[in-house]
Image (tube, rainbow, N blue to C red; front, side, top):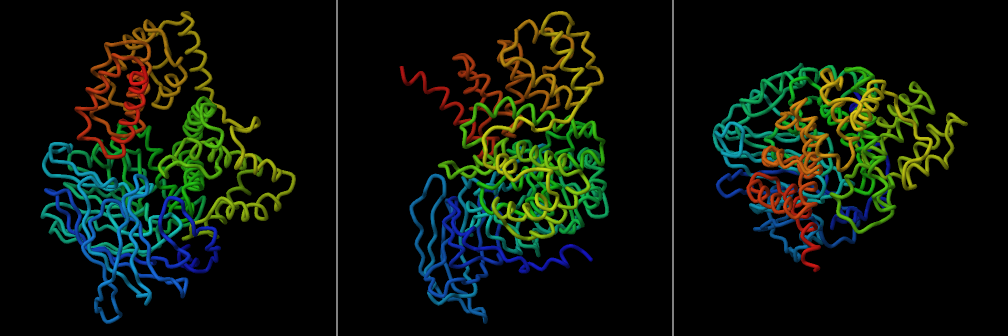
Length: 620
C-alpha cells in the first residue's frame, strides 16, 4: 500500500501543550486551529499586490474560547465574516494590533459562537516581506513581470492571514486570477498543460505548515523530466534546467528505496530568477530553486537531493517550532548525502559532507554557546536566525554518527520507521528523542549511550569523537595547497585541471582568511577565476581576493553581487569589502545599484552588514 493510505492524518496523538506556545506566532492553537485554507486571489503586477480573500476552516478546541487570533504582517484588512453552512455571511468584529517589527500585527477576531469558517477579505502591501515583485527588465527574458513568494520562516503572514507556526498544519485549495499569458504555480499539484488563460486552480490535499505555502507567477515555460517530474523556468532557461535536473526521477527512486514511497504525487522544480534569496525552498510538489546551480555538469544538483529529501524530513515530518528546525534541516542534509551517494557515488557524497563539516569546525567556535546547540535554550532571536549551519551541518553530523555506531542497515530501518510513525505531523526535539530512545538506543544496547545523545542535542560545540568521512582527493588537495602557500609549488602546477566544483570549493575554503596578494594574483593568472560563471567558486574566490587587497577583482565582484541575490553567495563579498573604509564605500555603491533587484530578505541582511560596518565611525 501507499504510505499516505496507511497513515491517516489523525492516527498519531501528539500533546497539544508541547506545541501551543510558539514564541514566533500570535496563534493560540490550544484554543482553535485552522484545518483548511481556501484562497481566492488576484495578482496585480502594476500595484505589486495580491488581493482577495482567505477562508479558514476551524477546529475549536476550547469551548470557552472567545476569539480567533491570526498572524499578519502589513496586510490591509477590508472585512471579516463568519460563514454558516448554508453560505450566509455574518460580519465579525476584529482588531488589528500595532505592528511588531519581528512578528507583524496580531489579528484578533471576536467569535464567541465558534463559526466553522471565517472569511477575511484583504490585500497585501507592495513591500510584503514574503513576496518579491520583478519588472520585466529584472527577469532573464525581459518579456513579462515576475512574482514569487518565500514564506519561510515567518513570512507567510505577509501575504495570507493565518496561524503562521510550523506546529499547525492545514490542507488548502486556491483560485488565482492573473493576466493572460502568465503562468501561476503553487506548492500544490500543478498542471504542466494548463492553458495560460489567467484562471488557475490548485489543490493541496495533504496537511502542510504555513511556511510551505508558496506561489509564483511569470513568463514560465515547462519541460517534463520524468513520469512525475517537470522543470518550470523562464523560456530561455528551461532547456538548460531540464538537462541539469534530468536525473530527478532517479533521485526520487533512490529515496523511495531508502525511506519509503514518495507521498506527494508529483515533484516539480521551478527555477526562479537570480534574486531568489536561497539555494532552494522545499515547497511541496514545487521546489523553488536558484539558477546558480545550473553550471552544466550536474556538480551542484545536490541541491535537488536536499529539497527532495525534505519531502520526507521537513514536509512529511516537520519541526513544531523554529527552535527545533534541525529536525528538518539536519535530517534532510543527512538524507541528501544518502541520495547523492546512491545516484552520483560515495566520493561526491563524502566530499560534500567534508566540506560542510570543515566549514562548521571553523565557524562554530565564534558562535555564542547557546547557538552551538541543536536544541538551544530559549533565546531572543528571530525565527530566520534559527536557520544556521548548526541546524544543517551539526544535525547531519549527528545522524552520520548514529549510522556509524548502529550500522547502516539498522539505522536505515529506524529512520524509515521514524518517517512513517510521525508522518503528516509536527514534532519537537523531545518527541523525537522519546521515539529514539526505545526504538534505537535501547533496541541495540551498547552502541551509544543516552548521555552521548544528549550531548549532541543539548551540548555546545562538536563532540571530539565525531566521525569524518575520508576523501583521498581532498587529502591530495590539502597537500598541494600547503605546498602552494609555502612557495614550493607554482600556481600553474596545481593538479587542478580535473577538479570538480566541490574540490575547487575545498581548495579555496581552506586558504588563509587574508591570503597574500601575490598568491591570489598567481592563482588568477593560472586558472582565470575572476569572471567564473560558477557562483560557488566565484563567492569563495572573490572573498579571498578582496581580503588579499586585489582591487583588480572589484568590478567582477560587483557584477557577481549585482547579478546574484542568493544570500549565501552574495553577503560574504559584502563582508569582505566592509573591512576597509575604501571597500565599505565601494560596497555601498554596489548595493545602491543592486538593491532594487534583491529580495526583501537579502536587503535586510546586506543592510545589517553595512550598518554594523558603519558603527565604529559613528562611535568616534
